[in-house]
Amino acid sequence: MQRLLPSNVEAECGVLGSIIIDPQAIMRVTDFLKPDDFYRDAHRILYETVLDLYRQRIPADFITICDALERSNQLEDAGGASYIISLINGVPTSSNIEYYGHIVERTGVLRRLIHASGEIAANAYEAEESVADRTLEQAEGLIFAVRQSHRSGQTKSPLVRDGLAAFMDRLDHLTQQRGTITGVPTGFTDLDRLLGGLQASDLVVLAARPAVGKSAMALSLAHNAAVRHHKRVGIFSLEMSQEQMIMRLVSIDAGVDQQRLRTGWVEEREWERIIEAIGTLSDATILIDDTAGISSLQLRSKARQWVVEYGSLDLLIVDYLQLMRAGDGTPRRNDNRVQIIDEIATELKGLARELNIPVLALAQLSRAVEQRHSKVPQLSDLRESGAIENTADVVMFIYRDELYNPETERRNQADIIVAKHRNGPLGEVVLYFERSQTRFCDLQVSPPVFPLERSDETDNEDT
Image (cartoon, rainbow, N blue to C red; front, side):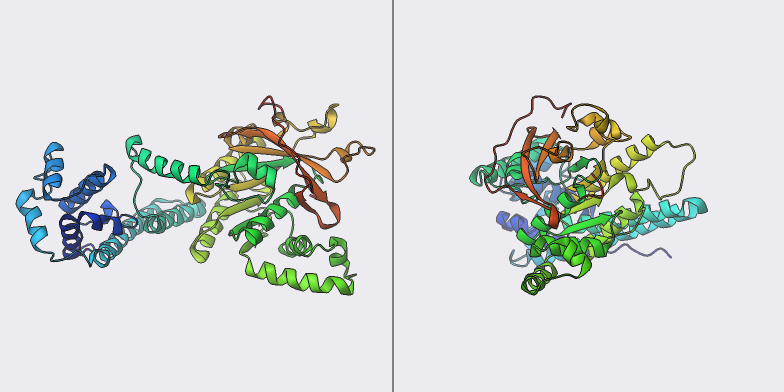
């Protein structure tokens, strides 16, 4: 005997009746209730019609709803005018609409979960043993999609006209907040001015030759975002252990020479700063996974777990891209290194879009930098793959003149070169590099942002 899918038709009637007798009541449910949450097709059609009227700023009463349904030839599918009248008569007040709405939402989640479970079972029956990891990743994706749907509230319409209202609201907000950072702050004044922070769903690549400061830059940025701006930051460290990363974070926060922390030669006056730094870092949400050689599927799975466990993430950092394995990590005889890096970059971009957060991926530059007169990095130096350049929304390079010109006057300075910026200007900013603490910070006197003329011209013990 087939079991009935979860539903609560009475609650669905309560939601719709409440909206019709009080058009303003819809504002109390639109942030979490979706058309697909309704079990009956007639109720789904009615709710979609009400939402469409709401987007057009037309009150959703009996007359406007019937008119809209007639124009779309859906009045009979929605039960007809007499059924709509019965919805009005069945609800004396709109005061309980949120309660009804959450009942409808929960039953919708349960139905989607049942559907996802059926799809998972079908995939498992059809899968071969050799692709079990891929099947598991698909299962996680299906369940995660249900959870994200539950969290995300109103489904976005694919119609541009429906998105324009949200765009205008955001533009109005940005106009009122002009000059503020719209993404995750890097903590570097000029870089934030240039990028507006790291933007949601962007893949941001930070590249340099070994020992220039990629990891130091990433950790300085993570510290700024988590400690100063209270963002939740996840770090996948494929090169350094969690213990090494923690030591660096303590050094950054306490302002204590990293070598002293490594050897234990800590002075009495430094202990107070170290203890204070430990307290500060304990209050921040920084997650570190140090699985060596992690695959892109493993990374995606762990990132999803972090979202479930901690409620959300604001920024994900991968150190570094070329140390990852593609797919489920199984070696593939016919794939060359370029194809593997292409796949990893594409999967990281997909993860940024799925979680709707920026993903900062560190990358190593090729030796071509060392073999020419000018050691300033450019996009063609991205090692093993043009896909990194093509897939990334932002590409930044680190250049430290003192590494190539020992007599330079620009000691302890680093140029951060924004060589690609899909949705904004290119440019270059100068930061101060504190070698003993392996951290980057603003120069005491902020330099101007230097614009670049071209986008096609313009990192690892990372110190």
